[in-house]
Image 1: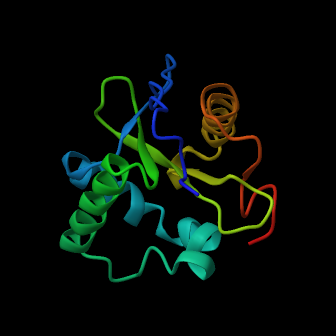
Image 2: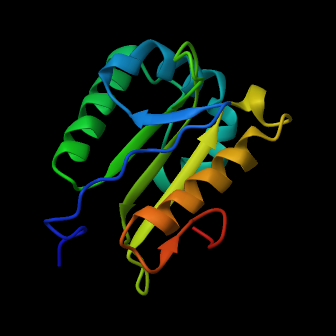
Length: 153
């Protein structure tokens, strides 16, 4: 079964006064690398055991390859990854991901994170709320897993 119906139009991602989501790609390389590596310890706590990411020795070139792959997967409608940016697009605040589910009983799996230096501000809660509402209201999934948040890895 396909991840999405063939005729499903990918919805416009949300934007607020504080942040916007935009498809993640190679144009975000420098901003993404900074966000990932400055938050590596926390990201490893969130995703490391499951994803093996981000490696301590992640290079800029490896991140470039990852971002290119994310964009291609988006174009092929196999998985979707968004950069969470400030409205002026001057800083990558985090990322959101929507993938086919590897868990029985779920249509999709969703993940999100924000930079470590923004956790205390509550930004991750606000990003998570907007992302969850958007998936529930604009995407065709009835059951979405949030591994590491609502369900254990």
